[in-house]
Image (cartoon, rainbow, N blue to C red; front, top):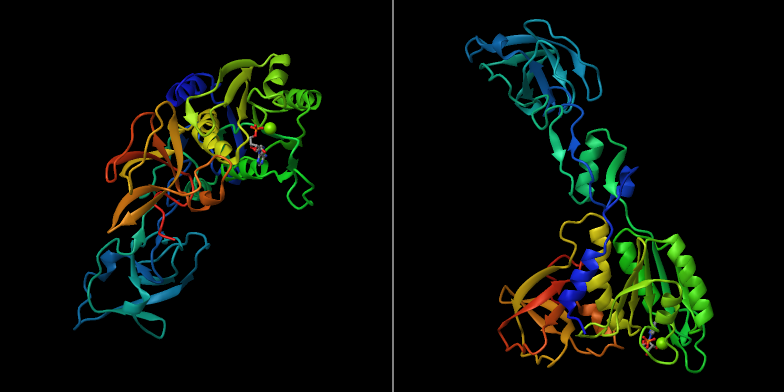
Length: 409
Ligand code: AMP
Ligand code: MG
């Protein structure tokens, strides 16, 4: 059986090269920029006022003194959005924040510092050239690189691109993902539970995890353990998607039809089974450029396997340079016993003790239990045979929500 590091490496090796596309500006949120972005113009686009006030030529105010006040006639008002006007010598314009500095002016005096009498500005001292002016190109020169290829698009990126006038973004494509939950015991949330049935929590949970990555699954299906039907739906998924996620039915029991179906459809197995808990019988395969994950059905196994394997696979295909969950070595809040053979992935919480971060394993670690995941902000990784003593540093993979360090609940 392979280790989880080997499994991650095998997945990484089989991810197709990220593909480029151009998408509408807002649709690029959460994607990775595929080409360097250069500014098509200077920013600011023109010299403009940083204040509401009065604008004039500083040189004209040289002679101003308390004894000999200077009087500049005010020509009128320039508002934000007005075109650039001209200023005659020894005159001033009233100017609003963001309005263009007139030709012939170079300085702005803030409104609250100005004395005005009958549309004449009275100055009792000379002013320094350039005061309260935002200069054309002081933030960006025309042609200057603003955002590098490989950058993740955040709301800030969207704002920056919009300030450059962009309505589209060159990014790497998001994969089309199909999600199939298998299990004859599964009922849709919202329906009555008949005898022997349980609610399908996997497909809503994985859908939500995908949606948080900006991916809406191309389809989500819930199937009974019937080879024929499973085969048919997987065949459809292989045609319609770049990545197929299956949950349940991936072990070797009599009702586990996922691997036989994949085999019949010529999906090549890259690995099956990883020395880990939960999620030992995880399957990874591919057919041409479509990747297939078969996740063991226990919900905690699905959750862990999604974030340890599927999440990085998707992010790598989207061009993220570091696709894995962020990781940290943090002191353990208590001793944790390792498994002699398997790596353990434990639902974990990173908290603060006297201002210092530490990690603790949550209750309810069995793979069929997920209620304690509500409090989790990390996955504690305990390699086989590497028990951790209280206070010793342990590896924790931080979940991609609730920021990095969570607050105490
Ligand atoms: P399996 O991997 O099919 O052997 O399923 C392992 C365990 O996970 C069984 O107890 C299943 O009932 C449970 N399980 C499988 N699929 C789901 C699902 N979609 N939602 C909740 N539990 C599931
Ligand atoms: Mg099953």
